[in-house]
Length: 390
Image 1: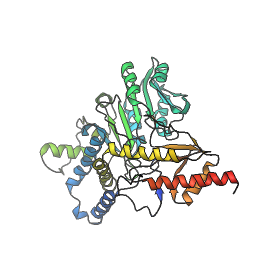
Image 2: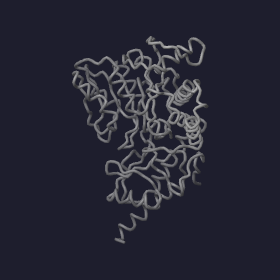
Image 3: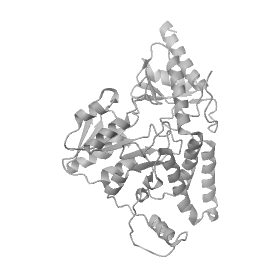
Image 4: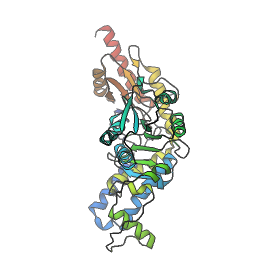
C-alpha cells in the first residue's frame, strides 16, 4: 500500500511531482495566506501597529526554538545559513595559529566564511574524507593541539550522507573543540534536540526543508558560544523595543543613543527582524511542520526513500547511503547520462536536481508514493530505451 502525502496543505503543483526540496521547499497554504496578510499590512499601513515589530520576530523565534529543542533566547533570526557561520567566524576570539577543520567536498557555505581568517593567521584545513563520510574515529586522528573548531554539514548536499553528530560532538567536547553545524539539508526533515546534542552552534536556512521563503534562516548558539561572542551589532529598533519592554510600553518615541547589554542571541538578529513578508510567512510554515510533527515527517520522508530505492532499475548506481542512520532524505543517483535523465524527468513532470554529475531526488511531507512511482517510471523507461537502442 502506497503512502499518501503527509500534508495536503501544499501546492497546487499543477500535476508535477516536486522532488527537489533540497533546493527549495514549497510554501504550505497557511504560509501563502500569511504572505497575503503581510502584503495587506503594506497595502494598508494603518493596520501596521508598533506591536507587530515585537510580535513578528518573537513568534518566529519561539516556533524555531520548539522545532530544535532550544530556548528562544538561544535563537538568532537570520537571512541564510551563511549569516550564522559568518557570525561565528567574525565574532569569536580566534588567535594566530588556530586551526579550523572542514571536509573537502562540503557545500561552500560551510567553508568560505572561515577563509578570510587566514589573514589573521588562522588555518582552515580541509579533510580528505571519501564520500564525505566523516566519523568520530577519523576526526580523532585529525584533531591536533591547534584545532579550535570543526565545521561540518549535518547532511552533505552532494553526497546525501548524514553525520553522527552525537559521537562527533562528544569527541569535540572531550577535546575542548567547538563543533559548528550547517543544518540546512536536515532541519525540518530530521528530528533534533539541541538541549542534549553536543553541538556548539547550528545554523540553517529556512527555504529548504523548513518550507519558508527565500532569504530566511536562523542560528542556534549554545551558552558557551553566546558568552564568547564579541560582535557588536546594535540596531536602534531592537534597543528601543528592549527599553520599551522594560518600561511596560509598546515603543518609546524618545531619542535614546544608549547602548545596553543584550545577553540573548537576539542581539545577533539580522537587521529589520520584523520582516513582515518573509518572517510572517516563514512562521506559518514552521508552525505547520510543528503541527504535523517532525518525527512523523522524518518517518514519512524515509518511507518514500525506501520506495524510491526499491524501485530503481538496473544500470543506475546509488551514490548516497542505502540505509541506516547515515542515510538522509537526499538520494543521489549515478547515471551514465545524468543530465539527459534529469531533463527527461522534468519534461515528464518530475522535478529533480543535477548535482556533481549525479541526479538528486529529495522528497518531503507533501510528496506521495505516486510522485515516487512517477520518477521511477521515467528512469525505468529511459533505462529500457538505452538498452534496446530505441
